[in-house]
Length: 352
Length: 131
Image (cartoon, rainbow over all chains, first blue to last red):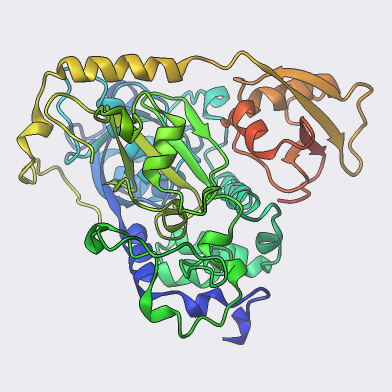
């Protein structure tokens, strides 16, 4: 254990069981992908009819990390020896079926959810929540300007580290927790993603991610008894208070802000400072946040109008009374960010 | 984990009928109109202040007003041009001496979260500094 002796407080050792459970559920989430080589770019003598590859990809992973597996399949099954010699994976890039460029540095779960909400705006589109996301793999002429990053796993890792640091800065106003990690620990975060290894990732990530233990001195009053417990995220863990030896500064409610981005269908992406506790001392909830930021889609409760949109986080329709602090501790992606994808409701649908 | 071949036997799950409506109806129409108001581009300008780090050349003028709806990538390209950097010349950019933002993040988002005294401070370096 001494290898991983934390320099800051040992939040890893006071993480409530429910937090670990939700982190694991988030981590283990996968999405179905269908990857089809653009038929126009298929090399001569390819075994047509087989140029489609199906896989369940981890939500926390990235497209560059899937390329080796896809390449192995194409070389084994589809391409002939000639094509295998000339194909260059540096030239590969992905597009959605609708022709949207897929970014190398977006987590795969975000690409999937972003596609789901984009479909929600098409009047005649069937919601395709349960079908694979169809991707077109191009083998040549990458539009480098628009892809922004080179397709290498190394560039992806740098972008990932940048996101982690940005999230750190949002939470604490500095990046001391990230820069306090040893090189081997920082690499361990990325290795955890590459190997899809929960323990490897969280052994380090728990040093930079706040826990859900509520602050002792400043904690908000318990919710009125009318709040049904089973619909409320278990942000306060009754069992954890006894062993709460870690300082309050590592609790989810004591961060300055929660790293959150709102994704609207086909853009834009909105980033705000999202404090965990509101000025009146109550916990900031997803409902309050959405109403404050997007009042036309999520009207205030006293307006007497129904919501026109819904929010999904990690592929799950998120309960509006979820606390932002809890979402930051339990439902953030591996890069530290809570991605709230907003889709439009149609006749007959309701949120919540 | 990967399935070698297509077996398009769709996993039939009970989807609430409401979710399979193909016609969005007036509700979707209203939602689309609401959405449009949030898609309007922010034409405001914000002040970006460039600060050299290490051996990077100092700029004569280092305050610029940049349209908030621009992506950070545009800021990087602008900076490269001002410095007379050729393609392939290394340039690393950071916010607040702390992190490199995603190139597709907007100046508006970065300004809202990280501005200091009305400026978005962009540090630039010829070597990786806080990578």
